[in-house]
Image 1 (cartoon, rainbow, N blue to C red):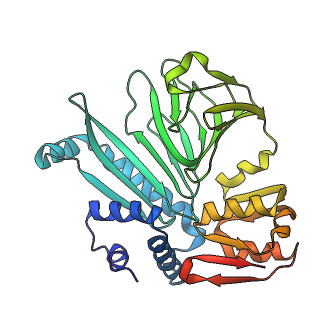
Image 2: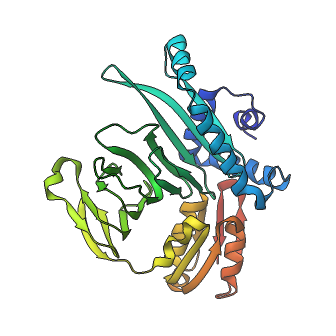
Length: 324
């Protein structure tokens, strides 16, 4: 077991060391595999009961919000330390790590929050303005603790579902790095994983403008039931095919007449694991299925075996599942 991971779970790492380790695990497969093993071990030990997850996560978040109100103490800490302060809060109920840190822009101090959700987990949080955000597995959101007077801007890497609080004087902007989505009050989904070669923004209700940051004048306005796919800087609008897809925010993964190949790609993304299918003909199998996120990758594949029988083998050394 990686020594730093052991120290992480024993609480022996400093705040910056913990954040650095989490970021490395996102790109280092061997490190990510060790994290997954330790998470599974912790789960087996029953540190947090599954049925208490929502209450525990909510309590942890409210505790942070209470601490955040003590602005004078935080400001004093910043002046005293004279560098960006980093606080790591581990919400054990959802295996979610959130870091909160100070940065300086144009001689003004602004507090930013960064929340990262590990593989196989999800998280719901409420922003300062009342906007509710659901974060899917392997997702990072960065947002200011208090929005400025001009706009409410957040950035997303991964997948998030937004229910934006209305404020006509202060537009809400989601940045994916490729395009920006600008709204006043609406509900929409953003799919923006770096591992994929495209991004997709789906509008459930309200109004939404999508544009490249350098050419806002060419913004495309979406209507409810429309989504826009961004690939190689090209924007393509279509209708939403299946609303049950967005059940992920409730802990359910739903697929309607979806190919085995596409389902495998999503499972690899959500659970940070490689799945190798030996027979390419199997990739064309169709499934209409619904899974609970908390069941985990192996239980999901066992359920899929009932529809189309196949054999699977674990390759723990390479964090891979082989299907034939």
